[in-house]
Amino acid sequence: MSRMLPYGRQSINEADIEAVAEVLRGDWLTTGPKVDEFERALSEVAGGSEAVAVTSGTAALHVAYVAAGVRTGDEVVTTPLTFVATAAAAAIAGAKIVFADIDPATGNLDLDSAEAAVTPRTRVVTAVDYAGLPVDSAAFAAMAHRHDALFVEDAAHSIGSVLNGVPVGAGADLTTFSFFPTKNMTTAEGGAVVSPDPELAARARRFKGQGLVRDRDALRFPDEGPWHQEVHDFGLNYRLPDVLCALGISQLSRLEGFRRRRQEIHDAYNGAFAGNPHLTVPGTVEGAAPAWHLYPLRVEADRRKAIFEELRRRGIGVQVNYIPAYWHPVFEDLGYRRGMCPEAEKYYSQEISLPLFPGLSDEQVGMVIENVLEVAGS
Ligand SMILES: *Cc1c(COP(=O)(O)O)cnc(C)c1O
Image (cartoon, rainbow, N blue to C red):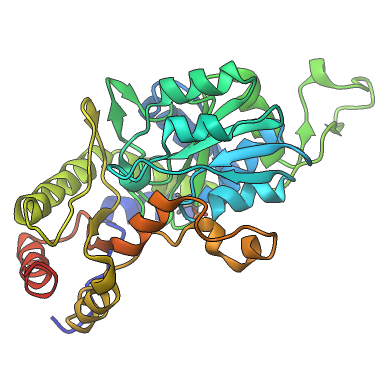
């Protein structure tokens, strides 16, 4: 193998390509029938919650925080073991970010730590389905509601995952997806917000569409003329175009196949590494049927960097997910200090993500296993 095996990559087939080409030959490039069709298909995967397609997972988080009413002075409680966008989008909406620690078994936000971080100013609690393993959305939503806050689930890793029969997207007040190429399905760039609450979904839809109101019943000046539309709250343009929604529809129809292949690879890694005294395999929970986005292996912290470099040298494109969000200089400059969330810091210090994507062959999986055992497991 001459090229570096990536840690994640898209799976695009001829049907995906044809779906995109067909839209390019048609009348609508941006907002047309494929947006509605993609949103209906997303709603089905998300247990019937209304879906709003947007331009990225980061945009989805921004839209979700605005729909939840986050404004300057509010607090958002979240996990540090995530891509920084989970926190950054809330900070952009004006919130102060309060980090709570993780459950070291799964990497997911710990419910008790999150509740301990809640104050009367908390507007939202946001958990991340780390690596694809769903958090207990019912428990998080109940906790948030007890404190007059909303629960947002950053499901950038976990579209297609199910916990106790409940699909991701059905349990939180607002759930966000990302369709970046390394994620469980892709639209190149893209994302979505889903909500079982029609009012939250309507606010999300207005914000991603420049705030425009066209419904006659909702207009303040309904008799202005047939051209008339109004803005009642400022919005942005986060509309996902028809071209990309067509790719999303095609990818969604392949999601269950992706999930099964990801699980097979996950099982093969677990089979090779579980019980090895130098390695810790990712935890799961009873009742979960995850669509695994990542395979976060943990190694001895003092060897992590050397193992990472040696695996890369051998052509295995490992990754680290994630540096604790508050280690980013933007948080350091705001006064956040290392040591705040010791479990998340320990997890980060040991973590290496192995290649995991549907197009990985059994032979490649075997090659990764062999090299990891040679480099890290003995
Ligand atoms: C990828 C990711 C995002 C951001 O999604 P983009 O589509 O890249 O903007 C947000 N949160 C988490 C946990 C992610 O992994």
